[in-house]
Image (cartoon, rainbow, N blue to C red; front, top):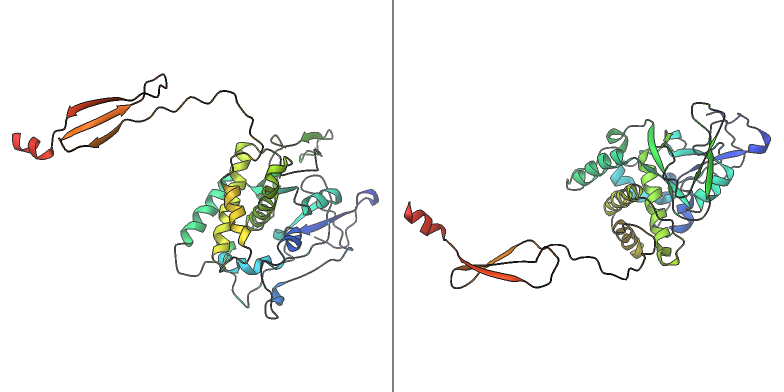
Length: 316
């Protein structure tokens, strides 16, 4: 990526690191001392311009890095003096200026595909049971191109005009909740995306009762929940969480099926059929009860002799 590349004057763009909006929200999450500051970077330069296409539309912005990574070093297998290449393209996404603003505001995020999340989750929870240091994250999930889902939490954008990756002139318009938007291909590493979406989801679900949270499809909600669960496991390796509400918010979000107000119904749903339940008594009988197929609440109990194993063996 060349810093001297140019774009059309009316479409100036910049690129941003995913952790930018987390800096202001979770700044008290980690206490930073002088020895840890070498792992931080605060690049607010406005002069970086790139001709690379925006993941959603076009264009890029300058980037900065948040100290949140300090809590994730154990889970990511990064040990001092080893440092993460913060200028790596695997930690950047090119965005148009207006999409950059809504991204930084936590309105939307990118979620890795379900198959990638399942692979990361399996490795994360397996390694979590081992006392050995974790391998470096790129040894588990290499730097390559991955597919991402557009996750719309709230607010703008309400619609996105997306060009075809194959160069078709006629663009297509997608509207919230963007369930029909095709997967976005990016070199972004899934670990960065997981951190970003987990924290944005936790912050978004604080406003769950406000009615401003977009209802996600079940498929996309599963991806968000998996990101939250993986991130929570990572944070547990970094020591006690400084923010008391963080785990509560993430666990609460992970248990939410659909984050939209439920509609009240006048009729209660039919009770689910109960499986037969058996229990012994002093007289050597078994009580078996079940509900009728019509969902009635009455229980029909039947007594039948219970043959003991010893008696059966004795007849043989």
